[in-house]
Length: 166
Image (cartoon, rainbow, N blue to C red; front, side, top):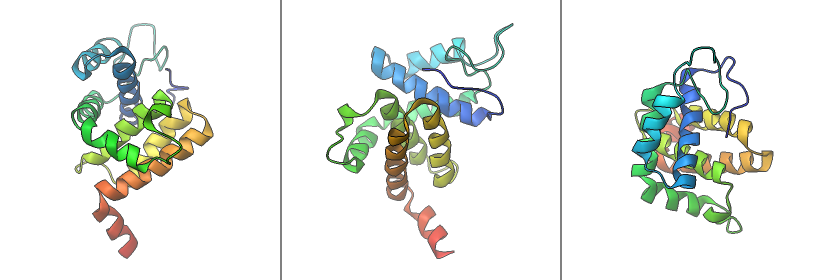
C-alpha cells in the first residue's frame, strides 16, 4: 500500500495514512500493534538521506505520536469498534467482504472518533475520506463515508447536536 503523493500533505494527515497502513499490516501479517508501530517509527516515519517525500510506503513527515495513538486505540478497542462497524454495514456487506484497506481505514477512523479529545468528527471523517481516495475505488469511499458518519453520530452525539442546534 502506498500513498499517491506526499506534496502539501500535513503531518497529521500522514499520521492517518500511516495508521491505515499499519492496521492493514497488523491484519495481513498477524503482527501486534506495538511491533508494527516500532517498525513504522524505525523504517517509515522520518526522512531517509536521499529519499525525500512519500514513496514505497514511507510517510516521512507523519506526526508519530498521533500515528501511534490511533493504532493503539484501534487495536485496544477493536472488540468494540469492529462490532460497531459490522452493525453499520449493509447486510449484503459483511466485515469479511470489505476490502482489507477499507477495514483498516474504518478501524483507524473509528479509533480516532473514539478519542473524545481529538478534532471534530467532521474533520476526522474528511481526513479519512482523503486517505480513502488514495487507496480505494469510489464505491468503497462512499461506503466508508457512510459508516464513518454513522459511527461519529454514535460515538460523539453531542458534536452533532451542537452543530444542528447552532
